[in-house]
Image (cartoon, rainbow, N blue to C red; front, side, top):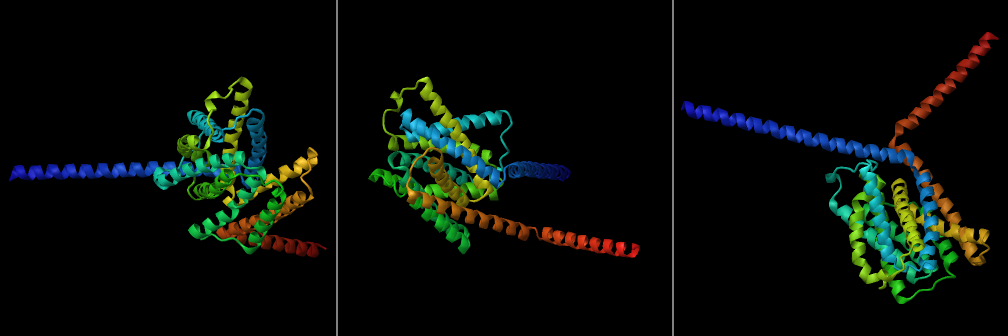
Length: 380
């Protein structure tokens, strides 16, 4: 019996030690999770601090104009007519640059893995490959005008998806502004609607993944503490894999026989570097604003390029196209103003104490003014 009691005490002591070890392990896991969550939240706050909506959208606009000119050089003068492979080069260079950032500890921290399902990151990688690959293929087989007409359809697609899946609605005034923007862009580009059956199918197939791509980028950054670079680092390998799978289906043969001399290779590498900056700036803009605002920014680029060509390079798009571009810019101005007003109202609703503090400060200032008047009167 004594031996049995000793054995029971020993087993209980072991169970107690195991329980304490388990609790310590859980506390360690919780501490690491909180540290990762805190670091990712800090990185997100730093991104919001240094790259607000105005900075992000300006950065995206400048890089977009630069890559449009560079891609015209690559696909026109250089003759690199392999849109999927060009997109693959863009993402490969982006992944190499982010790997360098990670080696130098410049890459922002990612949120804990259990805070974001892997399926969300995997889905984003797939739609990124489809969106960018099909966009370049559509631009190769269709005219710029038809490409822009397809881009107009992305706006109502985003509004519909966000309403169905996220119950997100927009005001009547913003709907009217978006309608003016879409009609203006359509009128501005209606003179150039050349396409073939394959190009039209590619353009239609591109609309849905483009809308989903923008929605996922915006939601993951705004709701899950992802920064632009951290999210790019996680999703780029998936995108590269699916771009490789798309190449045999959408690219013409002969990429290995392309003349890879110094000038041609330099142009392709420059396009790839700008592609990385475009992806980064686009992600920053989506994190700072919304998917719909990013589409409106893309249409703004189209109108500015059209008007810039008319004012700076003596191009003649015609009075109809110019009127459409001006109308679109007017609609964009109204939409931007409405979005800014809604942002201010949401901040006030989210932090009602700020409004009370401002009112309290105003009351104090009024009391001080009254006190100074009374003091002056009594002195006189």
